[in-house]
Image 1 (cartoon, one colour):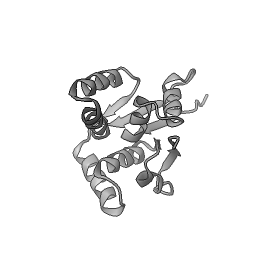
Image 2: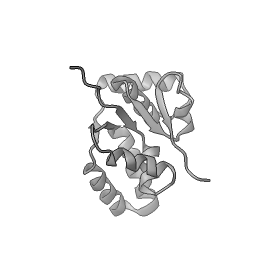
Image 3: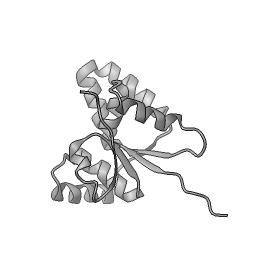
Image 4: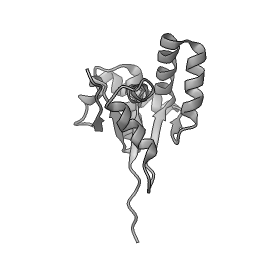
Length: 141
């Protein structure tokens, strides 16, 4: 009997920050990823993008808040991907081809590596939807 494989979801810093700061409707979508019943999705993030979340929180709310948020994130059902040499080079190749940040290149690279779908509202990544699977998130204006 063949079973349907679980969806592979990649979150970038944009998606996690929308959840953390309650920026709707994106926050609701990200929250629902973690609340799904039945077959669980595989949720993934690069440590590079988690670093983005950390420094953004630290700048806005201070170092202590960043540490607390990081500890909370570590409790979520997420696979944290530590980049290997091949991942660094894959991200560098993506960065060399497209107009996006180096950190975003790690999210895109991870999405390609696991054949997943990236959930993001970052316009630099959304424009790559012909090359990777993208689920576009948005914030109310």
